[in-house]
Image (cartoon, rainbow over all chains, first blue to last red; front, side, top):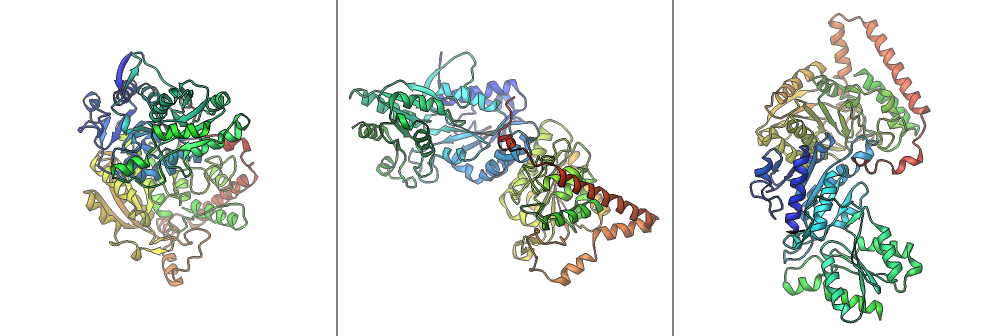
Length: 324
Length: 307
């Protein structure tokens, strides 16, 4: 096993896939000469040249459209948004073009495109740079939505996303780029739509993804000292969704808590809670609960930001209340 | 041009009796633009169209039957009934879609041209849009990217002077869309669109330029739609006098006059009209008699099969 950072794992996945398939290219702001705003594409310009690692002007709608058009004609673009906050000016291309091109053409135009980049909340970046958008994209049929939490998952899931013939929203956690983890030396992929049980337990299931996994894991350690055994289901992809993994865990623990970085209203956790009550109702000893970001734009002040964000203590407290 | 006119007249009839649903944006009056432009292309070239895509599709040589069936929402439609009037697609004919979001397809067309350049193929992409689309971000971003990368694309602004009900003078700070090419150091052209040969000759210059690797062109072609924005629009925002003045310049009439003066016999043209009407009638009947898509199709093609 090699120890890689989350960003290095993503880089390795892209490099390996681009070495194999000349139809794959990487495009975005500062991906080339600057070596990536978050250095995910470090070294790729030297390796693949300007024809395949392509710097764009600041024009997300334009280069997202370039990606979609090129995917219609057989290329396999990886489009990097410097952050997902900037994807909102390209959301027309993503939802109105990429997500439904295959459907509205009667199956004539598969859309082998990956939109990827930094997402998530925190870091005192303020309201416009600190937002979790996976729920927005997961709302729309026609796209796949992937949110890896570890270097190992980031590598395997990005490779699967690049090889997929559908538009994939691949949201990397900005806060996790520097985190390290074991990544097998041998090449591997992780199928999209397969959750991972990150921790086994018996008293309560925490269902989570991306950076919120860390809050769950930390909370589980705190609770373990209190004699509470937590199981953690890391969804890894929201579309497709591994519903079975959720139900199996809930059948075992009889209690569920969804933990996510995003806002509560119409958030993806609401869908998970609905599915559990619909399909595992008989196994529940308590209503499904959620821990989310507070329902406000992100404040800048350190104490207010802290108050807004989910964290391990809030997760632990929610678990205690469910079990009380 | 006659096929487009007759096809759309038949479609309008079908719409009025409820056989066609949704929006139906007719191209009647603008035929010379699509026919002249697309005649300048080769089969390897690509076309990206708007929600007013019937004329472009027919000009590309797509058959009336699957197009009419698409309007009827039938399984035999060009997009299997999933697309409708605004979403004609034919991958084999390099007809890259009618697109329903005004201007959103402009950067997408640049992407198709990017692909040609990436793969070192000498295909050219033509992108049609109206003057209303010239004000949205995708227009500016698409043109800028096409210009800095010298992509083989010809942007054709079909200026029919109304963005739905808004006349150009209330929407465009500079009335001549083509001069926006200067902002992107791009070649430009501006012509009247009622003479099909003239349209062809001007567009051909731009297509050849793109194929030589000399970059994109923005062409504004002035034209006029005889109908409203869509079938549901009575077009009360314009005067009868204005409409009549443009009808006098009907591109079909002009083409016919030119052909006759070139020695083509009137009776031969009449015979041609008749055979085209028969083709349209057959398309109508085919669409009407075709089955609706099976309900099992509802979930098909949401995702492509994995490779």
